[in-house]
Length: 255
Image 1: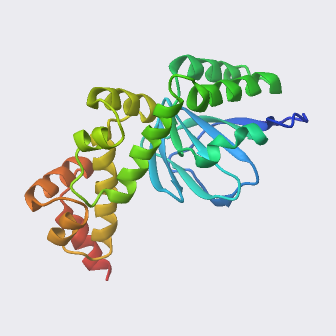
Image 2 (image 1 turned 90 degrees about the vertical axis):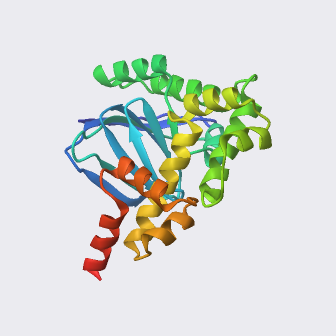
């Protein structure tokens, strides 16, 4: 593990500090509030982030963003704990992150550069700033993708707020102006999962919450968008490794 604090005064973007850590199994940080932006690059392993948008599963090759004033908690996986490097920063150029998403896929060539920075324990703020500028460019300012990225974020946001309805990928593509295959590629590139996989993840995470709160399996199935209870139970078991009835039973035993 190492940490380093920078001293620079760029107004549009300033790297404040950086660090790297190989986390212990189940290592947890938070709840905590930052006064700057903070990006973590997951270089190996996996873990979870909780923020105002809910729970996010994060694995190698992804990064997550923490915003100023935001309450967050993050935790290393109990079997395959993550190794991550972080950069704290602020400045007017960072504002696109305010309206952006919490988790992104990191381009492989960028991830290699980040790994090299942390392997050498670089203390050059310019090198970390170059990573931030490139990341901003790739995520928000690519001329050919600016509009597409905005609509991709809207698709993701739509799913989070409408998972309980009869959502179909083809309908989403038509609503947001994509060819279905193009939507698949863009969503997968940006978030590391397909639209369908993301919809399933949101539904299963919500289902687990509802079951833990004591709702019956059949009611929970309908609450998260499944008309067929059997199909819901099959998907839940595949996702978590045990049937929803077990989650409900554990909830009843705690009551």
